[in-house]
Length: 99
Image 1 (cartoon, rainbow, N blue to C red):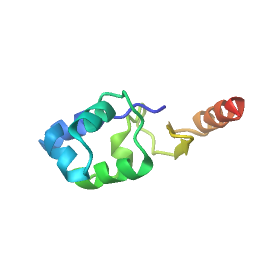
Image 2: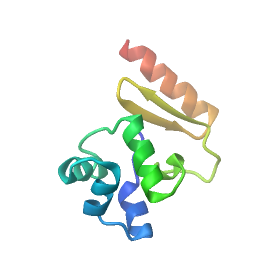
Image 3: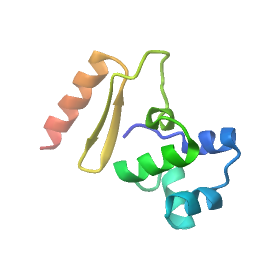
Image 4: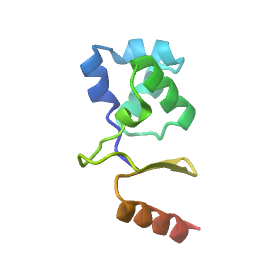
């Protein structure tokens, strides 16, 4: 799964976990677990977080490079981010292996 950077975005925006929880309608415990990578959020939850923080959803993912985001993929609850065609091909290969 791509690493999320929700904690960093919250700090940048001056938003506390408790406030974010209220804004997205998720318990503080679950929000904390999402931020700390203990659970994978749904795409709907990521959209709510991005909206609450007033950022594009891609901002919630570590870029890893300076390239434009090529793809954000959700497969069976896992999220993958690819910044290059090679990374995208690698993700597709991993998904095929799991099936």
